[in-house]
Image 1: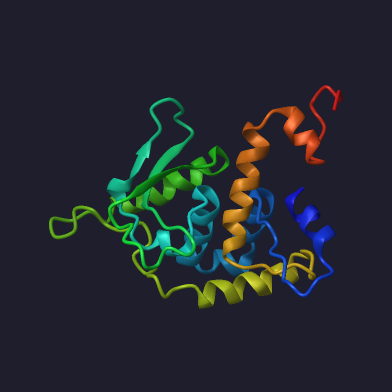
Image 2 (image 1 turned 90 degrees about the horizontal axis):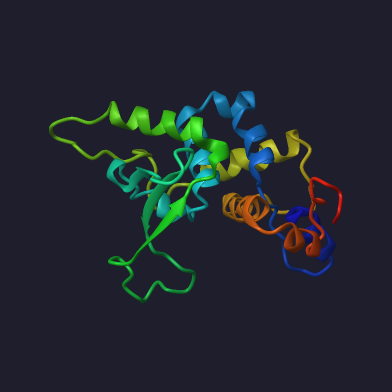
Length: 195
């Protein structure tokens, strides 16, 4: 829905980002090329599952992840708050909690389980993505662009790492918004066909 809406906007000089919803992200992480790079695959899964910005991913530690007390299909991931245009403001003491998409529960359990295996006396709280840092992303962006073409995604859209965040927002809306809100935006009809 979001990707289709973005395509209708195309026509100006501004590049329009694609939205990597769970179905597209799932196809991506299960492609042979991505499966061959497990650390990169985990980055893609975490971006899709949490909806965090790329630079919020680097400092996520094991202690930042807690199973949701009301829904055991959801992880709560606490990250340092980061909003566009706030580089001069010190937000290092402000946090936000991202509730993971239940679609990714099995993968989140695997990633967190693998992180637990890396706990040592000298590192009792390891990072979820130990090789990911604030400057990371060039290889991940390149592979994403290559796979977008191979998977037949709309070439008129820009497929970037932020597409995972856009897709996570769209997934959350489609799971939790009312049928009326979804229908008003041209989304899928309700189960009973009334919208």
